[in-house]
Image 1 (cartoon, rainbow, N blue to C red):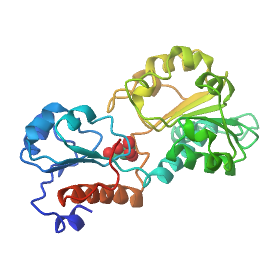
Image 2 (image 1 turned 180 degrees about the horizontal axis):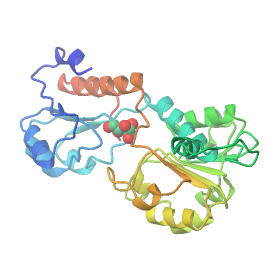
Image 3 (image 1 turned 90 degrees about the vertical axis):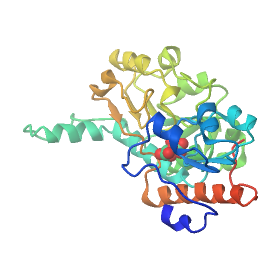
Image 4 (image 1 turned 45 degrees about the horizontal axis):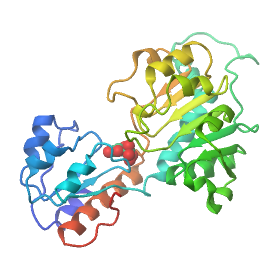
Length: 310
Ligand code: 8YV
């Protein structure tokens, strides 16, 4: 995708990720100098210091992600820098991975796989690896029903799940047609759902949205799935509640202190952890990169960006 857009760019294109690793803070500060457009990833913290290091000519930061909690929007607005994201193109891929985690935890897929890899002798038994039958009327609670949540609902509907959701969209007809009923509050959703799946953005208000109190309010034996942002969940509280036997398990694609992962959660059989691969489908990643470049090029050409933030 980078090569495809190189010729269309009005100026020079500098690529600072040749090793595959994110740039260090120093490398980031140096690499943005003089840039008119920055194409950023979630691992790049774009704050006032980075924007100032770029200089007054900077016009746009195009994030290759739907989430933009890595960017200081106020600092960008103060400097008249447009910020764009990549909504829409990754909904299906993230929803697929959400269902993968949902099934991996409830039906103990990763646990069974780990067991087989130990090489231990085993004999089939009707009791072994019994998990939650999601297709037997389990209730899925979608916390923060947006585009991705809707794609999750579409899949859950096919599984015959009862679906409840929070968020404005939960009251819309398109949600109703997917079998989604609005939950009156987060508390009601937590108390009712057999599986709670998080799909809200990370903001100051949603940090630790799921803490000790909320985890205690969840149904005994229920599951938490997070393909949104790690800091939505207080991981130590999650480890405590799984340790206590109150929750059935958790599926986490994202982590509170990425790239670090919680050492307690890592030891728990009921927990499935992935390295933030929600949108890592081959077609999806190209579409995300392409949309970010098209946003940047539009702004550089003096046109309206396709998907501005805000
Ligand atoms: C990406 C994501 O993997 O879109 C997001 O907000 O977290 C993921 O889809 C990541 O942002 C790539 O930069």
